Amino acid sequence: MNISLIGKKALVGGSSGGIGKAIAQQLAQSGASVTLMARNEGKLKSIISALPINEGQKHQYLVTDFSNYEAYKNSISHYFENNTIDILVNNTQGPSAGGTLEKNVTDYQEAFDLLFKTVVFTTDLALKGMQKNRWGRIINVASISVKEPLSYLALSNTIRAAVVTWAKSLATDVGPSQITVNSVLTGYFDTERIEQLNAKKAQQLGIPQAEVRADMESRVPLKRIGDPKEYGYLVAFLASDKAAYITGTQIPIDGGLLKSL
Image (cartoon, rainbow, N blue to C red; front, side, top):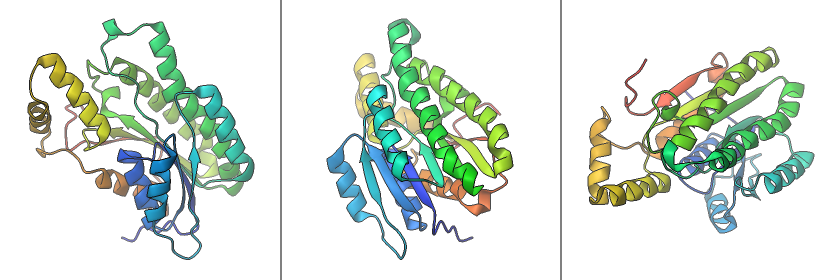
């Protein structure tokens, strides 16, 4: 099966590294013109210089900070004054780790701004062009923790669950315009984020970080951590015409880690 996104334009959040970077690379390899979006301009420049450029492709980047909601609103609004997109990948950096007893109302509000308000605001802007063209793909990077909460990720558990239920509702509303909305439930992937979480857990438990990773791998039925490239393959499929009848779903990509149905 050939995945072709030739002629499509994609906007990928959090694409200066990890899963977002892998998604952007795969969409570009499939023929899409990609706009990278993150706060580190140096990393964005480096990544965009290495993206494939075939006939008709034009890549660009947008420097913005998802954690500053008002500034983000201004930058993304300006972007959509001059651009339309076909594929939106909603992805941001994760909020700080910690359990419910470590977090207060302000922490939850900041996480809500980061994970939910940026997603809804960006999607609303993107939908205008998608509805006009009667074609669009909205793909949300979420987490398996919306189904099985992780005790050390209280903020992420809570707000990402809101994103997934919002996306399910949105899929019904925009379906008549042939726009699909899907959420990907992320398991363990080999990224800087997972290393940061492992380092904190190792410190709390007083054990080597390698031991934390080994334990994590042992919990996955496939006995390994995922390669971000594998994530990119799934998103490219969901972004293509091959996935035109898939919408309103929450798809785990976790090596079988989830125990629930």
